[in-house]
Amino acid sequence: MFIFVRDVDDAVASLSGMRGVRTLKPPSDMPWGERVAYVTDPDGNPVALAATN
Image (tube, rainbow, N blue to C red; front, side, top):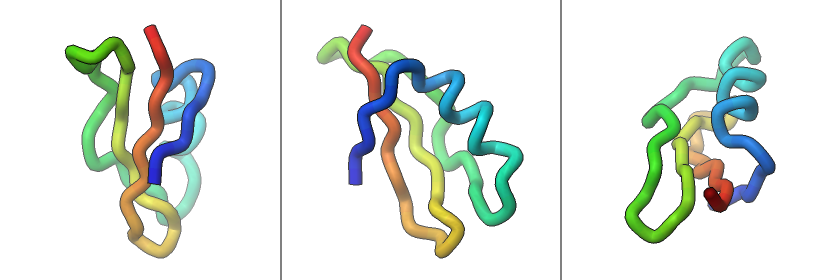
């Protein structure tokens, strides 16, 4: 699942303190113009956070 946010770095920072949320891949710029990070939800399912640059 992809969730589009205003700022990926802020979203990951906010989520990192929540119980059960892990960062799978830190924010990075993609060649197609989005900044993307991958985290888990509290059940362990992967979730992509994305924003356009």
